[in-house]
Image 1 (cartoon, one colour):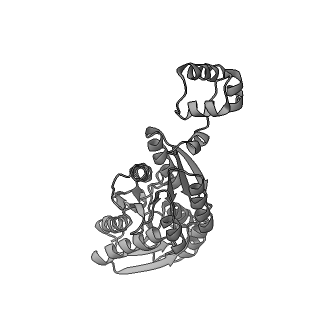
Image 2: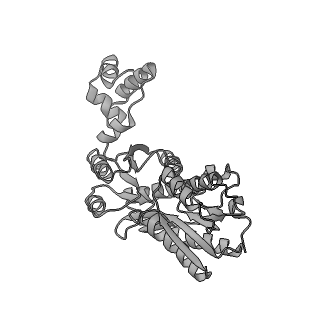
Image 3: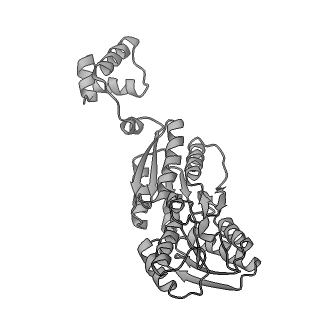
Length: 328
């Protein structure tokens, strides 16, 4: 692959002249034509990242995700990419591997490399996150969590929980067991749970049981195997679809019929839930739209255009066969 040095030698100019040409600097028409001819002959494609570092305004967006093996993350990234492409940005993705310190270091490293802005797909916002983001010299948008001093794009987790319980109450359910996650993830561990419990209270559920796991399907399966030994769990709501699918497997292994003996529901709207038998009742989240919106917000911040501190993405309840027949 040709380099700037190769282009300069073949065009009979200096490397700095080639750099000025690539970055839109002032050079003579004759020199520009020489350089352009060599670039075409060599099929040279300049690095967007290298060019952005030399330009006054970077075209690079740093995106930090907690994990890459997640349907939610994948869809969010697709949404971000759709808008970065439209607005002529280039995104670089950093996988933090669910490590807060890696997220902090990624924010700092992106800032040092003069990216135009940063999107953090967050599962937890700690005081250190807040301090780092507030001190960051480039704009930062967080997705999935919120903080009053940081630009945020969130899903309507409270309404998601409330509306799911409302729909299940209309089917005739009046007891529930909720398998949640730690409150460290504020959106899922706190807000979503509050929506579920508020809905249960409004619709006068007779019994509410709460269990706590994590996002691991293996742990959910283990909890489910213990849970479904007992036949007093007519409805189990899981914090995510992945957890719900693990519970469905546990119920089937314990010989419990779904939904006749136990109904199961989750959150996310992941594709896997619709391939289960029976299909999973879920709350559909617009992860791709959240990605799109976060990039649009970031673009406004980069261009110093005023925008709201918080944008809320709505959700939608999708009833499947896993809760079709409620016990009265």
